[in-house]
Length: 101
Image (cartoon, rainbow, N blue to C red; front, side, top):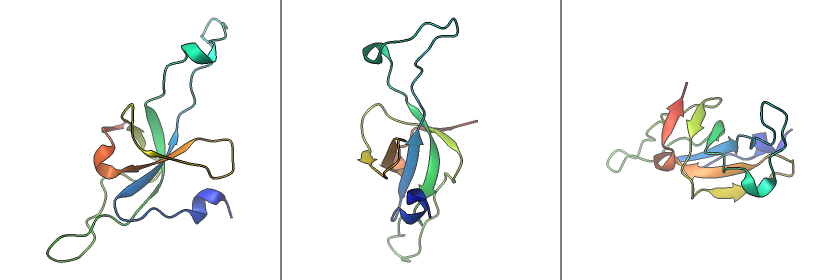
C-alpha cells in the first residue's frame, strides 16, 4: 500500500502534491535552483470528509475532489513527508485559492 493511501486527512483538510518546478527552459537552458520560482499549483491527492455543520453535526462536503488541479497560496500549508521524493502539503479547503481546468 502506498504512503499516500495510508494518510487520510481529517475534517476540511486536503492533501496536495505540489507540481514540479521548471528546471529547464524550452530552449534547453538549465535554470539554477535559486532562480526557480515557487510553484503555486498542485494536484489533490486526498481529501477529508469535510467540516462539521455547527447545528446538525453533519459533514459539509468539500468542493475539491481527488485528481483536480488547484492554485495554492505562496505561503501556508503543512509539509508532509511520506517517504518518497514527491512534495506533499496539507491545506485547509479555505486556503486553496482556485480550481484549475
